[in-house]
Amino acid sequence: MKSRIAVTGATGFLGQHVINHLLDSGIEAVATARTPSGASNRCCFVPLDIANPPPDAFERLGAPEVLIHLAWHGLPNYRSRHHFEQGLPHHYGFLKGLIEAGLQKLVVAGTCFEYGLQSGALSEQTPTDPCTAYGFAKDALRRQLEYLTAEHATQLVWTRLFYLWGEGQASGSLYAQLSVAAQRGEPQFKMSGGEQLRDYLHVAEAARHLVTLAMRPCAFSLINLCSGRPISIRRLVERWISEQGWTIRPQFGCYPYPDYEPLAFWGDAARLNQTVSV
Image (cartoon, rainbow, N blue to C red; front, side, top):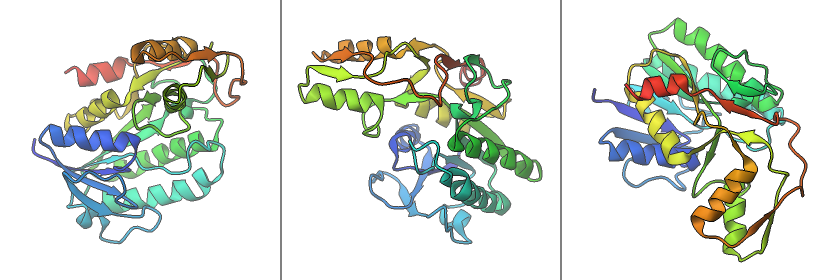
């Protein structure tokens, strides 16, 4: 089908990859963010402030058939109350306006933080139990949108993103910190014990999956966006070092493990694989 797809957060780490994949696939894309810094010059850019959207936001975005909603601010401060005191009502109000204006399909970037401190393989049937303000706000937004889209002809696809990595990631991320340290010629990279199991997906693959979910009919309204393959942070860092040919050595045990994450958790990718492999 020929669609126009709008992308919020289009100038961010994941958003830039989503826009490029849409354009490379011959899909008409409309990018939106608060400012054009980092925006692609290959497609239309519409500046929008989700906290104060214009009443004709849907029309300004070109009346898209699909919206991929990636925007969210204030990360990685996962505990800040602003996620539910400001972020939650702002995002719901913005999306409500688009849905009521006629948006046909909404694909939203949720988070594995909705699962809270639960361990092991987490499927979409796992009850949510967030332990951070960020996870709570995302889970609450999903519930609000489920009620709202049930009253309209809008299909909701809520994706729970696990961990992404790749070039251009925020400076505080693990891969970015390691890359900078290696390129500076530092001999060692201080980190945690590295025994925690996580689910990491390259950003380009995540972008490809999001575009596929936006373009295809989806049998599921809730999908984990993950690899489905747990890997220890120790092994992951060692793999990155080997693949890049860096000489830096990890120094384990320098930092404590985060108390807002379980030691071992990863996503069940069965639904994702079933949907994108059709």
